[in-house]
Length: 454
Image (tube, rainbow, N blue to C red; front, side):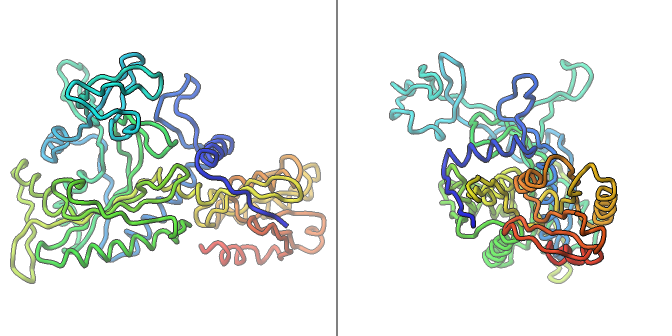
């Protein structure tokens, strides 16, 4: 029998961070040189989980829909794009700086640390890190600047993209001209974005470099955008089940007009109950024709769409669902993390959906020093690898191998023992229930296809 231990808040977060480092999901960035604040690298397990998230997203939102297609836009775009979109002018945050340690903070994120601000500054408010005094607010650019050209003084200033959306808008006409898509249709993209974030903490929730999964869905300005918006909200909710998130931990927060971007007529933040509290995981916004209209005006390129049915020309309006890969990964691990008491010992297990698990199956010989067991196990391993991502493990004893596979979320373990040599069957151990059963080797492929769903 087993019983689950309950953890919340900071304690749960510490356990998740520890597991991610220990088992190769997430490493601190540049750790060999003492680290680089607000950066992380994904290890062997983390990159597999990320790729599973992105593959599931791409299939559900792009490949499974007739009204969707995709692109992979550049990270460095013409600076004229960011001028037209308003990012160079408006993509800034107010910050205060500690006079002692010189760290900078967003006032809205450490509001509890401040007395009511006065025109001269923040009065008696102190730095949350060292207790030093704080300066007046100053505006700080959230975009990373770089220079194109061999000589910095003569080069062209460019920016690492702070979002993936603008590459879609810049290629909207190319997609129309090169495909048979007609409005309404959408363009999806998965890719890196970069923001010069000052507010740190909460692990990979907010970082300098992150991955987005975004859709720009183009509609007629005369269409019922409210109905289409609501349909997208429902469709996004369906993605939760695919990746293993509990709908009870999600809530849709309608963003009031005074908090929305000036061009947005409606925005919903889909918030998940992370260990550190309810916060934005995904979002959807109605951007109207702001982006395409700005790019048409700035570029001089005609971005109007000709509707064959109505014989009208118009600039399409846009509904934008957006998803953070890193935040989604953090939500999935938070959801899946369990500690259980099993026969007086603590078992740590990630109860990931099989489709999300880095490895679907692990194969081991009962003993690594018995060549006949190793050969049989290797044959099974190589056969299953043709259809699944399979982990080979012959280290230590069986108990330790099980515990390792539990911590990386592998749903099934296959053990080849001496009975396997005579009966051509193996022991299958289920991660969640820990129950074991014997399955014929010839039936393994079909068995796992049914269980894993692929």
